[in-house]
Length: 122
Image (cartoon, rainbow, N blue to C red; front, side):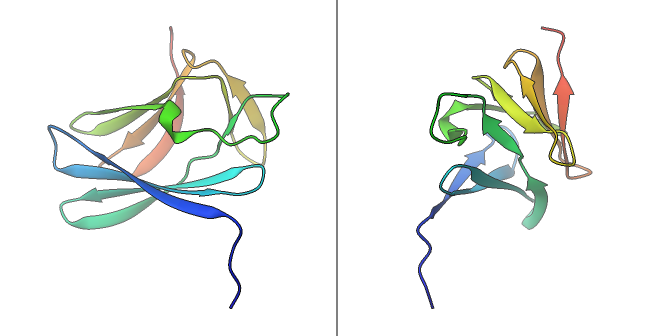
């Protein structure tokens, strides 16, 4: 059995008002990171899917988007993730679109357990 040269970390967001948790399983590879999101609600762990974001930095050695650049707000039926720096998001089929942090948010629907990007009017 071999050892991976990459690291995996588990970050947990606990709502102050609601009884749910958002779990980030982040594996930093050499140039990119894989971020898987899960929600724990009512004792049930559900996979939301991958958070396909990258740091938008042409001069950087890697495209890893640091987890401390997330701002998370929980509501009764959804969780909003605001990204505080410019980022690229895979809108599908490896189509990476650039976003300003004021132009989009990541929305998590707690009931349907879906993850989407939404444009904002800021």
